[in-house]
Structures are given as structure tokens and as C-alpha cells.
Length: 527
Image 1 (tube, rainbow, N blue to C red):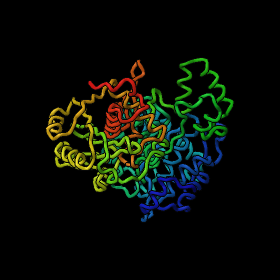
Image 2 (cartoon, rainbow, N blue to C red):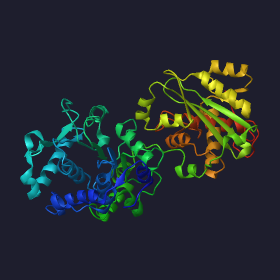
Image 3 (cartoon, rainbow, N blue to C red):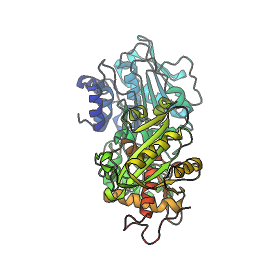
Image 4 (cartoon, rainbow, N blue to C red):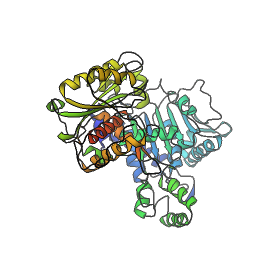
């Protein structure tokens, strides 16, 4: 089985792929499960290539040193008609029986009773089609429950309306159509329900949604970060089949990219007919893109290409820049955000040196929320954890003074909105401070120049993992005049360091040290 970068990291962390365990799960599907609908009704559940090799084998074949499953959570996003419902039901039944877990509790969660009922009926029909399973399992339709009396295990559906957390000890949890969850209440209530189990699994399988303030969008972005290597989370499996927003949505090649079951569960002629209808109707076009190609409604697009970003970094030593002219910028936090200090060296290949600051208290909780290793970054010296619940600006001030002694700091850009006291102190310390507001007037020329430097490969971010994470999170907003700026509210996660780097590039360009930029002939607007 082909290993991903995440798999290679997992191997170094002590996980291994056990071929027998992966094959055992595949054999369970093909020997004991039968389809209940359509032209495959009554036939064995022979997994499609993507189902077998990208989901079932990895999910159940990767183990830790004790023989327990590597993956504790997973997110699968795939368009409609790719066999998602049958796959959900099959995985739920395998969790009930295949792990041989005494007293296993497996839950299929859905947004409402109707959706939960669909999951239950598919599972029950699969069991009725299987002589072996129907002899072992008891279906209780009145309570949407399937029971294995021999091991005191059960499979049950649950919805937001019917939820009760009392006494739950979850071995397996399947969230069907996570995008349909109206809020995160059910997710938050269930996510730690398997804490007492040896190898619990929380797996979401969904089509694209439209609400970017949802638990589904949060999980999608986290999964993208894991897939693309921005975040190392070896116990999370991400699998996303989708077209990009700028793909040619009428192209059969794009259809195949988003629909791995095209030609199997989906007829190409049916897809073509749906596309022809969508061409004639903006409303149908939106539906086609979302349900057939998994393009999120009102989807925001990451500002900077990960591929281009990665091509810009070298492992330079900041000490080699001693005495060189540089321009600094601060993005100050108030409470839980990171405070970021950026220094850019325009005459040395636009090298960027970054420092970050965060309150020490609550760092573990912020790690869990943001899914990044703040404590590791602290140990590596990339992040200064300051005592208390808010960032201690004295640490920031001290680092700026140390930087001014090591480098030729020509200017420090600061947004005056929440930095009046620190700005005054920096000026008293002899640091030239430039007021740099974070509105369109100041940020747009800086952001466009920063984007140009990344696209052209003329910037060097030093392969800083914190800044790489933030660059992957960043989304820009645009005003009617075409001005852009990084948007913290719309971005997938924190972007404080990237904002500071953009400001530093902006104040460097405004100094006139570099020519040929968007500033030439107009200067920078500092308000």
C-alpha cells in the first residue's frame, strides 16, 4: 500500500501497517455484507478500489505497538452517489463485530431522525441479506437498535433531537452527513464518549456543505491541514474528494477527480445530463458543483498556494544576518491569539525571521482547539510562552530590543489600535515606530507585494513551520475597488504571523529600499 507523508511520520512515531489486519476488514465486507439496493441488491459488498485502498485498509490496518488502531478519528468528504451510505453502514457493522470488543457500543449519528433512520435501515437490510449476520444479530426496529447478545454489544442510531449522553461508552461513532449538523452540540457531546475504550473511532462521512462556521467546515480544514502536512496528527485520517473552485466543472476529467466511483455507482451519462441542466440554470449550477463535485457553497479559497509557499524556503541561519538592515512589524494579541514579531531583510533575498508569543496558561487547551503543537514550538524556541493568561508585552519589548542590537532595524510597523503604550515605550527605547493600520488602504499594497514575492519565489520564509501553518490558513477579503487584505475572521485558523510578515514587507517597500514593487510611484498609505 502506498504510504503518504503522514504515514511516514506515523512510522517514525511507532505505528506500523499490518497487512493481515487491513485484509481482514476487506474480507469482512466481501464475505459477510451484501448490498440491499439497486442493481447490486443481494450481491456481496465488493469494495471499490478507493474504498478498499484509501479507506478500509488504512483505517483498520494501521496499528500501534500494542496492536490497537492507529486512527482515532477520520473525516471522509465525497459527493453524493459514490456509495457513501452503504459504506457508513458497513463500517458500523464491522465496528460492532470485527474488533471483537466486549460490550461494544456503536452509534450512527445524524442531524435528524429521518437521516438517522436511513442509516439504520441500510444497516438492517445489509444484515438481513447476510445469512451469517442475520443468525447472529437481532434487529429491533422499534428502537433503531441492532444487538449482538453474545458479546452484549449493540449498534444504535442517534440524532440531535433524541440525544441523551447518559451512560454512553462509545467504541465506534459514525457521523453521517456532518455538514447537516445545525450546530456543534451533538458533536461536542459525543466526541469524548470513547475515552474509556482502548481503540475508539470517531468517523465522519459527508458531502460538502455551505456553512463555514460549522463543525463540518472545521473538520474539513483540519483534515486538509493533515493531508497537506501543515499539521502532524498521526491518529487522524483525512480523505477528501472534491473539485477545486477554479476547475472546469463541465470537464469529465474534473468529474472523475471528485467522484472516484464514476462509472460504477454513477453513470457517466447521468453526470453529463446533470451538467447540461446546470449549464442552463445558475441555481442548478450551484447544486451541481456542491453535490456532484463537492465544491462548498460560498467557499473561501486559501490565499497562498502551499506548493508555491514551500518552494520559497531555505534553512538559513538568522545569525548570519547580523548587522543587516531589516524592517519589523508586530501583530499584537489581546488574549488567546498569538502575538507575532516579523523581521524582513529586503536586501538579503527578502528573508523573514519570526518570533511568536502566547500565554503559558491554557496552552494545552489551545493545542487541542487549534490542532498544532504549541508546546513543541515552545521547546524549539519558535514560540515564547509567557507567564499568565495574556501575553506579557515585556517579553515582546525585550525581544525587539535584542533584535535592534543584533540587526539594523530601520522601522517597526505597529497597528496603533491596541499598541499605544508599547509603541510609546519602543520609541523611548530608540526604535523608530511606524503606525500601520490593518485596513485596506495600508494592507492592500503590502498584501499584493507579499503575494507577488511568494508567486515569483523571491521571498525566503526560512521553512518556519508556524508561518507555514498560518500561510495555509490565510484567506483574503476584497473591497469593491479590488483592494485585498488578510481576513482573520474568514481564515481557517490563526494568521497573526502572516499578518505581521505582510506588514513588515509593506513598511520595507515604503522605505524605498526595493524598487519595482506596487509601491513605486505612489508610496504607502500610513493612517
